[in-house]
Image (tube, rainbow, N blue to C red; front, side, top):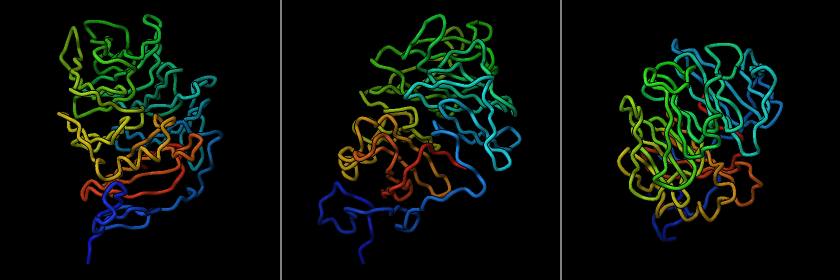
Length: 337
């Protein structure tokens, strides 16, 4: 009996066990199985508008808050209903803006390039952090909140700039040697910062064709970002996911595993060519990755060539078996609940 090797559209058609074409078949611990179908969450209504990202925030006592954002509002799931937790008034996100969420102690912060960083401290509505910039990307590491691809009153629109808050104080972004709030730029490679993800006490910052590994070094620089050799980067803010010992991300030409030293392909000779033939290059920046720890898989949602921008297809990668599957499922955002 030939063991199935997973979805392998790039291999020779005579390869034993290779699945050259499939629909809604994904890998799991002992083989392949049917992909889950979409369901309606019992008792939870739809949002008032399209979801521009969602997150499950875990507080210090282990309790969780569930958030979703639209172009105009931020909502929290409470008692089976979406409660408006927006700042006073509403928001006006740009056409391609998405909310990026991060948890810092009990405070939930979220950001996009059109809005001053928002904060909700354990409960209640969000509000502007007065001294913070606007930012396309936000992350936390080593006692700091770090914002990337920013717009602020001092430097204006700076796609290659990063800011960090004061040490252990996400409400203070005024530059100071004593608090270590500061800013800098990543200029050794061209382009805007597209994504960032904490990596232990370090942080990985991505451009479209570059990777930087940032580490805390204390005053006056505070954060030092060293460029990883090569011209590989990440296509979008949600196109990277943390799997613990490494990160998996999508670049302009491949799907990579990055362990802090060098990135290497997990798709070459398997699904790489098929993916880039079938994924919309126009909407590749919308690609969204999520790590399902329980199932030990990474879901890679993307807009197909047939899509008008919706994430309507997914590749599914099993980390243990190093096998791929494929699923047809339209989503607006992905989070672990």
